[in-house]
Amino acid sequence: QEQLMESGGGSVQVGGSLRLSCPASAYRYTTLGWFRQTPGQEREPVAAIDSGGDTSYDESVKGRFTVSRDNVKNTLYLQMKNLSPDDSGLYSCPAGAPARWSPPFPPPAAAFHAWGQGTQVTVAS
Image 1 (tube, rainbow, N blue to C red):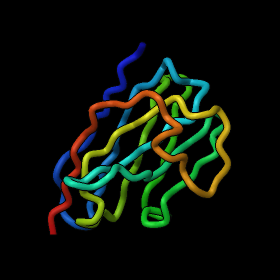
Image 2 (cartoon, rainbow, N blue to C red):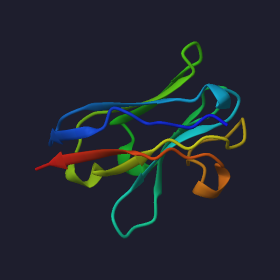
Image 3 (spheres, one colour):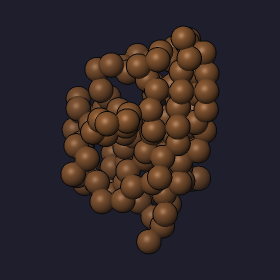
Image 4 (cartoon, one colour):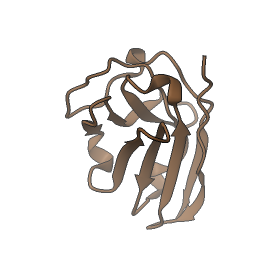
């Protein structure tokens, strides 16, 4: 089974941007997502994109984050703009949720069955 491996995290200033990537060739026909976890908290959904390209977002990131998938490179992306300290956390890209997922809300964690180790995002004020 393909191991998911996120990249692109780092430290940025408030208002900065980052783009996260996650190769996921084994999960081309499933819904892919991005989750964020902070110390002592449950991981929470940030965004998702289904196999048909339909996207869904948490309200807190709408208008600032864009989730996309490149079906040639079989890679999932999360473009993050206008970052704030509240966006800090460990970002994971789960895969394996049902192929079609209707907006507006991303699938819950239980809908996914494969997870990466995560990439850290830190937004300094």
